[in-house]
Image (cartoon, rainbow, N blue to C red; front, side, top):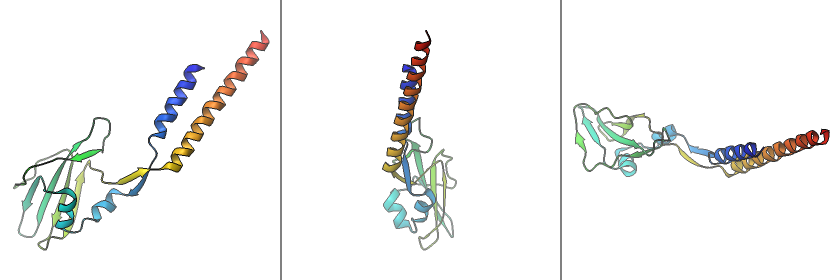
Length: 153
């Protein structure tokens, strides 16, 4: 019984920590960058850039923050931008394509999530209340079951 209570408590605590609410999706965030100035203001200097006759492409390299989260990434801090003929194949990146006027005409990404999230307090409270209810309910059921077994002996 003690193991059940500990297991339920740990499960409740772990699920309680994951209550988040998405404010802006990844796609909404990408579409908010309309010009080179917007991109530079948010991301700074690109890791690599590629210039063609009609377009200019900027690649931003990202690194994983830790080994536990798949899409939790930090922008790679580069010192200078390298002009290349072909981009290096990174595991995580953002790629912006600009027209001749400096407007974003396309954005691509791989394993980067720019979604803006915040903790959802209401969901956390509901989750805690549910977890506490389950723990107390399981404890009451087990206690009454053990009392019934003891009364038969």
